[in-house]
Length: 349
Ligand SMILES: NC(=O)c1ccc[n+]([C@@H]2O[C@H](COP(=O)([O-])OP(=O)(O)OC[C@H]3O[C@@H](n4cnc5c(N)ncnc54)[C@H](O)[C@@H]3O)[C@@H](O)[C@H]2O)c1
Image (cartoon, rainbow, N blue to C red; front, side, top):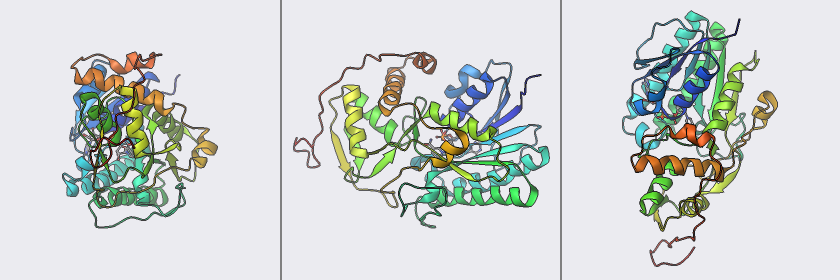
C-alpha cells in the first residue's frame, strides 16, 4: 500500500505553492489547494484543475478551516514588498491568524505541518552568512515589519504549538527564490530585471548595486521542502533553504542583460527603508540533516526564467514549465552589455 496522503497546501496557487502542488501530485498524494487569490493566479494551477487528485478551494486562512487532512503546508502569505506592503494589516493577520488557524487544524487532525518562513526573520543581519542560530536584526515598526515580524510571530506560534501540544512542525527559512511563474509586476528583483530587459526598458536598481543576494531556483527549493517535511526530526528546528552563491545586484543586472541580449541600461534609484545590504544562507544544517543542496546554476535558472517571461509577455499560453524541464540549449545569444552609469552619461560601469 503506497504511503499517499491527503495534503493541504495553503497559498497553493502562488509561485512556490503551484510547484509544490505539482510535486505532491506527482508522488501520488491528494492535494487540496487553498488560496484567497490575493497574489496567486489561477493560471499557475490551471493545468492541475482536471487532475483527479487535485482540488481547489477559495478560502482565506485568517478564517478557520475545517477539513480532514494528513499533512499541511502553510505557504499562504504575499511574499514581495509591493504586495505585502499594500495592505500591511492584512499581511500580519495572514501570518499570525493564519498560523493559529492552520496549527489548530494540525492539532485536531494530528497532521504534520510545514511553515514557509523566510530569511527576512534575520532582518538586516549583523552576521554573514546567516545561520539558524542568529536571532536577527529586525525593525519592529518599519515598512517591512508587517512581513518580517508577522513571520517571526508565526515561528513563535509554531514552536509553542509543538512544545505545548506536541504538534509535529517543520520550519523552512526560505531565501530569495526565482523561476517561471513569478508574478510579473511584484517588484522582486529577478522578475523585475528580466521583464524590463525583455521590454527594452531600463533596469531599475535600488541603491548603488553593491548589496548582495543569493538566488535559489524554484525546483531546488521544492526538493528542499519535500526533504524537510519527510525528515525524521523529533526536536524540530528552523532550516535555512536557499542558494549560498552570492552576487551583487549589479552583477545580477549585468547577467540578465547579457542573457536576454537586451539593449537595456541600468537606472539607479534610492534604496528603500530597511532593505538588507547582505543576504546569504549558511546551509550547513540543510546539508547535514537533509543531504540537500541547490544544484541549478544561476545562469541555467535565469535562462529558463527568461524563456518563460518571453513567452508570457508575447502572449503565448503554453505549458512552458514542462517544456523547460527538457530544455537544453535555450538559444539565447550572448550579447554585449549596455549598462549606463547613474548619470545616464553612457559611461560603462
Ligand atoms: N519566493 C520567495 O523567494 C520566498 C522567500 C521567502 C519566503 N517565502 C514564503 O513562501 C511562501 C510563498 O511565497 P511565493 O513566492 O509563492 O508568494 P506568492 O505571493 O506567489 O504566493 C502566496 C500565495 O498565498 C496566497 N495568500 C495570501 N494571503 C492569503 C490568505 N490570507 N489566505 C489564503 N491565501 C493567501 C496568495 O494568493 C498566493 O497565492 C510565502 O509564505 C512567502 O512568505 C517566499
